[in-house]
Amino acid sequence: MSISKIWVLAESADSKPTSITLELLTFARGLNATVEAVGFGDSSESIVSELGNYGASTFNVVTDVNDSLPGVPVASAIANAVNSGNGPDLLLIGATYDGRDIAARLSAKLNLPVLTNVTGLESSGDDLIAHHSIFGGTQIAKAKFTTDSTPQIFVIRAKTFGAEPAGGGAASVNQLTAGDLGATNGAKIIARHVEERTGPKLDEADIVVSGGRGLSDKANYSMIEELAKLLKGAPGASRAIVDAGWVPYAYQVGQTGKTVKPTVYLACGISGATQHLVGMKNAKNIIAINKDPEAPIFSVADLGIVGDTQKILPKLIEELKARA
Amino acid sequence: MNVVICVKQIPDPAAPGELDPSTNNLKRDSKLIMDDSDSYGVEMGLQLAESSGGGEVTLVSMAPNNETSGLRTALAMGAAKAMLISDPALAGSDALSTSKVLAATIKKAQPDLIIAATESSDGYTGTTPVQLAELLGLPSVTFAKKISVEGNSIKVERQTEAGYDEVTCSLPAVVTVTAGVVEPRYPNFKGIMAAKSKPVEEFKVADLGLSADEVGNTGARQVVFEVVAAEARQAGEKIIDEGEAHKDVISFLEKLKLI
Ligand SMILES: Cc1cc2nc3c(=O)[nH]c(=O)nc-3n(C[C@H](O)[C@H](O)[C@H](O)COP(=O)(O)OP(=O)(O)OC[C@H]3O[C@@H](n4cnc5c(N)ncnc54)[C@H](O)[C@@H]3O)c2cc1C
Ligand SMILES: Cc1cc2nc3c(=O)[nH]c(=O)nc-3n(C[C@H](O)[C@H](O)[C@H](O)COP(=O)(O)OP(=O)(O)OC[C@H]3O[C@@H](n4cnc5c(N)ncnc54)[C@H](O)[C@@H]3O)c2cc1C
Image 1: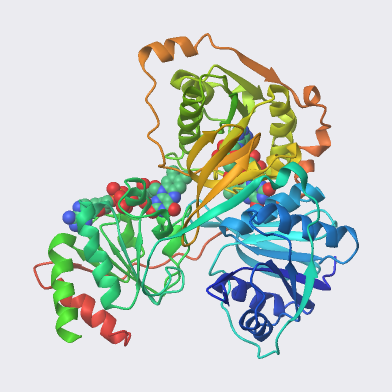
Image 2: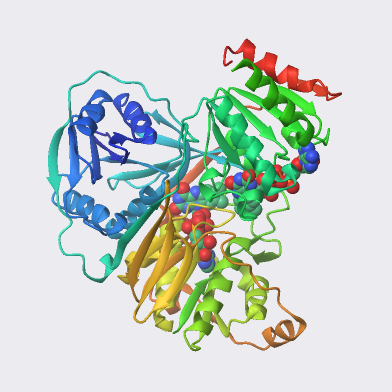
């Protein structure tokens, strides 16, 4: 099957397309097809110029999402486009909260399969081959669709591709509508709660400082936050301390959390379970502090320190403060 | 309020997983257990049924070899009964075919609320519950960390990138819950004994009005055709802290010109 038109799901925050959107556009540009974005919400100048800069010629924006959770209306609008012959051959969607909803709704509407949690995508002849990281990232399963029906739908994890601007002009805006959605559209957002956070985002930061159960106590997580701040990085966490309620889920790194790829990942009191490793083992450099010399985290660490976080972190903080 | 809870029965995640070399499907022939991720949904469903003045809690599971051990765990926690779909034709099903099977089964129970986990521990596509909602013509709210029933609708706190959204949703609906949001109860002895005699109704693909080629390896319309070893990362230097190891971290960061 040859691909002539690609749609990339465009999501935005703070009047900017998200980094996963730019990563997917960058990859799509390499496929020798028309590249367009599809999304909802903000279609202001700063969004369309950035989408264009990364290679989208058009931004197809669904205009009647209103206060609905986006999954249903956005999938319906895309399905309408597909059913009237204006849809894409390939749809690239980021593995985000709303991205997964949209992919799943669309899959059922169009009776098409989805390849999910994709960590690599390569073209081979007419096929696109998806890589899935399995068994804690020790093996890669290569999968492809066996149907010629389109669009092919892939849900891709963050940091699978790098983001590079192409220097194109602003994308033109094309409006899509979802129409009447009946009972499926019963979920409405009535209020948004934003947790205050400063510094770079976890999946965009150059340095990530993560803490785990080895910190022993919730109060000790403040050392992770302080270190992250001193290093202009972002604080992260293992699932153990997210489940324990020390930090919100948004901090979690790993299979069921974020995939990060910073220049340095500093793991403090984290054992290195396979489900944690899949989320961070592609960091350029890994430093681990753990009191157990046999901790699995050391098998991926460029610098491993066998020691007590409660002793080492205060000294590290003091030293960095002295230099600031 | 009648609640259906999806319970996936999976190989023990602590045991190393294995693929069948002839099909590249995950091997599921060992004893299966209730996916830990579903224990939160079971707890949430039991609490909601109780707080809304009773109502029946029914479990639904699609699993090989008529497996019921995971279902018995959830029945011991307090669910009233279970529906189990087991059929050799289902081997190799993808998420969409799984949702077709679950949808056809759940239709029979006519629930007010359907609960699933945001993603399973083994396949973790996280798409099945929303595909299921679409097939049933229902709204869905994913990533719920709190659910309360208010008359004929529910109020949900849905996790977002920045915090959480407050969402209202008409019933019937599908909701997926995240791990750690409630404390799943431990089945007590009485519960375990009672679970042994609770009804588990079994279905085959044909009982659901689905054809065999809509499910299993044929229905999946996707194939894992190769499995290769990932590039392994080499361990670097390991230092034992004798009071000065923070300096090694500093010089590591200095070398990278990050400080
Ligand atoms: C389906 C599934 C999905 C999962 N997804 C994720 C995920 O996305 N992310 C994730 O992180 N986990 C995930 N997990 C959980 C994972 O298996 C581990 O349980 C978890 O990562 C452990 O967190 P931890 O390393 O903080 O805790 P532990 O494993 O308890 O490790 C604590 C470590 O701290 C060390 N330590 C203790 N005291 C000190 C001290 N004073 N100084 C220094 N070191 C000390 C110990 O030696 C130990 O190595 C998942 C599990 C499952 C089954
Ligand atoms: C490593 C791996 C990768 C895979 N990749 C893909 C892929 O890219 N695309 C694809 O379509 N399929 C994929 N599959 C197959 C998929 O996992 C199975 O089809 C599975 O039956 C349903 O998907 P899930 O486990 O991902 O469910 P999820 O969507 O993650 O499940 C969410 C929740 O739905 C409920 N649920 C799911 N399955 C059942 C069940 N059988 N019985 C009761 N409740 C259930 C549970 O509450 C569960 O926690 C993959 C499988 C593996 C092992």
